[in-house]
Image (tube, one colour):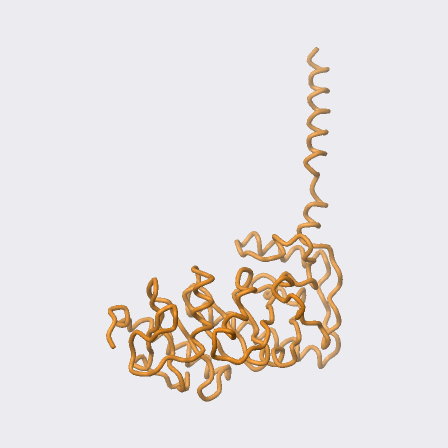
Length: 288
């Protein structure tokens, strides 16, 4: 099969390079994991099925359309490409998707343990809350659809009893999300061996969100009124009745929401109007 967009050596090599990094980091054993990159309106390059990502070559890469139909390539596309395509359909800004099984993050997936917030500054600024998609047998559309309720507010999702999926505008960005997540999960597990983790206080947490907003990064806590700083999930609507409960770590402190904190620190519209009215009256009296 031939397709004009299939001749893209740079992207194919990038897919292979990310595959080598995933394999070398121990994020994908044997034939685990898959990688994709959108090269056209309806064309996606992806890793094939049954291949070790650490030994993948550009000629192994194949091409599919957004419905999963294979357009080009000598090897058969991965069955889990539907997960990648579903993400791309719901998030037109996403061009790259990386799915693998990083061991520390996957430990949280297997334990079905939500990842604590308000612990590490880099995570608060560059990642934020990481949701746990409900379990479904991998490979089909039902499995792919498990991530849909969470796509609006994150670029990183833990797949329950399975692994992780991260995505972004470039392959490097998508891969970095996975690496950051697994490093954080490793730190949490190591810290737990020393004792309970210590959460950042309300002031420290608010300052990090201020920094995040200043840097131009979005966060559900900027928009969800009843989402507090550290413990209430911004993804509760997606979880419905399956919202995960924290068991391995002490519960996060109950701080007011970011929006509530900001509104409390600023005068309300009515107060400003009163102040303005009084000022006008004083000025008028002085000019008589």
